[in-house]
Amino acid sequence: MDELEAGKQKFLDVVQSIDSTVEVVIPTTPSNSLFLISLTKGANRKFITVPEDDVLDLPSEEDILAKTTTMLKEAIGAL
Image (tube, rainbow, N blue to C red; front, side, top):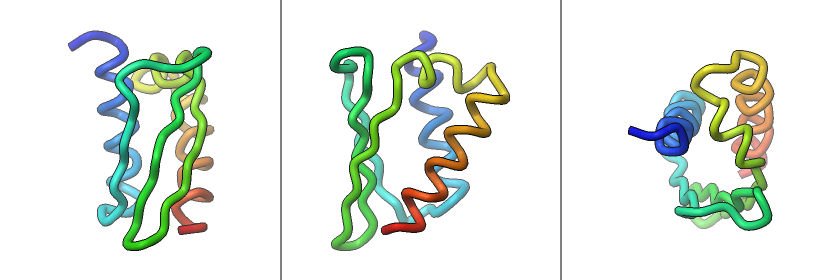
């Protein structure tokens, strides 16, 4: 598994730990070094942008993991 796939998997794991009913769509490649990620719960959908570097560093950097987890909690709470 390459770095990007490991980061995407960690992102999915974080979302599932917050709310297992949220569906996540992560593009296969970033646009302008950003991933536009879709979070869907029921009829509600929210898009968030996550820098490519954050996705790459997610499995290994605790500060990136904490920042991303906080952002996801807020986004999922808004659904």
